[in-house]
Image (cartoon, rainbow, N blue to C red):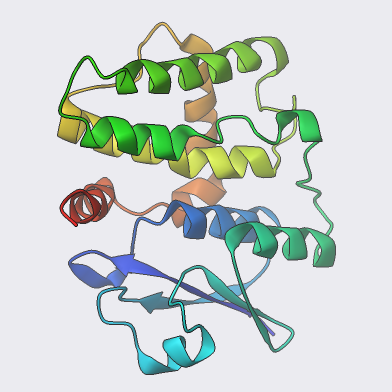
Length: 212
């Protein structure tokens, strides 16, 4: 039986996949492990009652495995790794926190109206640390083989690449060459190509959050 997963529908286009990085991470794991799945697109501004009955907090992703619905992307990834161990996507603890602050730092920079508040530098420091790690350990964060940390980072980097040029006229510096090579590697994977939403819907989703 195929796995079922509730995902965010695109802002302004509820028939298309939307821009949630936590949903994207789980979809990447499903694709990398070649697990068949069925998607339910959830319009988060008008959540269907059946979805709220399953999940009163109304959060995505929500996944159905063995007749049980499970929420929280990290929990879901852990369960998938246990139930479908091949190929292994597990990562050693020393790389597990790499880039973990990219989302909050990029959003802080997006919201910033003061160029001197340090938010740009904080994001840059996080990106530089990732670039430095890749220089020494690449091409993926744990060496030759892709792991769950890469699948967590790919949606965050994609979001930065889509939203920051649009809202801040800002791009990741070209000097971070290892990071740029890493992004090309991630974005070219079949799993990423099959699960990414269009950049315009990343921008629409971020715009909604900035205005809320």
